[in-house]
Image 1 (spheres, rainbow, N blue to C red):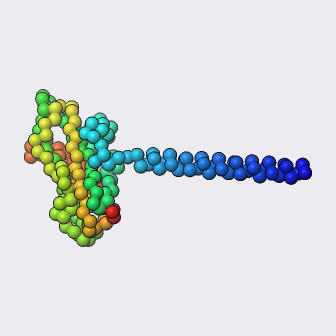
Image 2 (cartoon, one colour):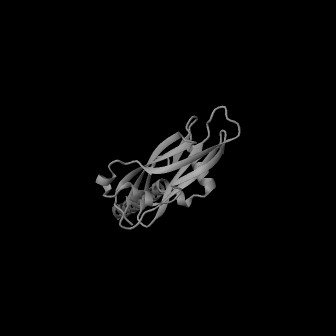
Image 3 (cartoon, rainbow, N blue to C red):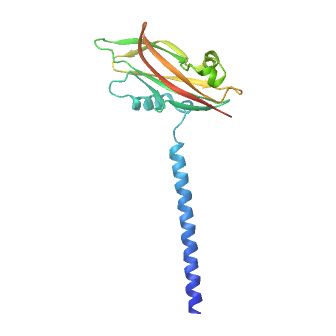
Length: 185
């Protein structure tokens, strides 16, 4: 009788241990998933949140930054999302503000081979912020803009490189790129 009681106690202890371990495993998976999916798209961010995120990406001497910092954004068909663009005025010997402009262009020479479309089709997906002129930025200050894409159904599922050229007058001030991956809806 004593051996049976010990065996039952041992099996109950084993079951309780297994249940606790499975519970912690599930909690760990949920925590990791929340951490990795916490990065919001540009559409979900307010202007102040976007400004804060872009300012975190600026290094001491960088003239522009792109959010997300990975320069990689995935957008599903029939969904609107995009990137944030930060421009920092680092002009030396200039008092007051300087006027900047920017333009987003397809910078992928292989777009026809990879995606079966031309650059004008990919550019047409930009609904807001394809180009902007006359952006006054005080010396040492930053300006943040959104570039939003709306990917139509039927768009090819591929990755396209876009380039953002920032100009001051007729001179290119800064240039950077990001990659857009089109996902199925």
